Image (tube, rainbow, N blue to C red):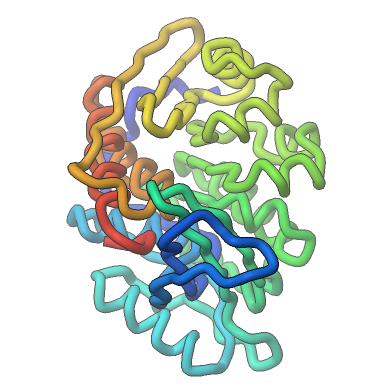
Length: 302
C-alpha cells in the first residue's frame, strides 16, 4: 500500500448522494400514535453533497458527481451546491426517478433519525463516471451509500477502481450501520480494500469489526486501510495508522441544534488539513472544529 502522510493536494472529487432533507425539529420526544409539535424546514442534504459543500466552504477546489431527478428539487439542489462553490458539471439528471428525499426527525438535544428515499441516487451507474475525472494528484472521497445500495454499487466499485488505477488517494465513509448490517460488513471490507482513509462512526466501526471498543475497532480496521478515523460524536475522534494512534476531544457549541451532517462536516474538515500533509492531531482538530459548527445549526450544510 502507498505510504501516506497526506497527499499534498487540494483537488477533491466527491462521489455520492445528493438529497433534499425535510427536517422536523421536535419540541418534545416523539409522541407515537399522536401529535408532536415540530418546526419543519427543508435543507440540502446527502452525505456526499454535504462533504462537498463543507470542503468548498473551506476554499478546497471540489467537484461533485451524483444523480438527481428531472424535477424542481433536483434543479435547486444542484444550484445550491454550485452556489456554494462546488463544481457540479458532471451531476447526472435522471428522467425517470425523482430526486432523493430524506425525512429527518430531530429530537430535543439534537439527536436525529433519518427516513431516506434515495430516488435517483440509487440509479448512479458506471456510465455516469467519465474517465476525465480520474487522474493522478486528485483525491476521491466516496460516500458509502453509493457502495451499499444495490442500484449504485457498480458505480461505486468502478469509481474506486478507476481512482486507485489512476494513482489517486481515496477516502470513504461507510455512511450507515443499518445498511452495513443488511448488506454484510465483509462485503464492504472487500470492496473498499486499498482505500487510504476510512471515516466510520462508532456504530459503523463496531459493525465492521464486531467490537464495541473504539481502540480495538481502529486497530482492526488499520490492518485493512492506510489510515482510519473513528468518529466518536461528543467524545471526539480517534485516528490510527498501523500501530500509531492519536485522538482529539470534540468541540461543543453553546447549543446542540441538530447533529445531521456532523460526520460529513468532520470528514471535510479533516480532509482539508490532511490533504496538505499535516500531523494527525491537526487534521483531527480541523474535523472537530467543523463538526462543532455543523451541530450548532439546523441541516447538514454550511
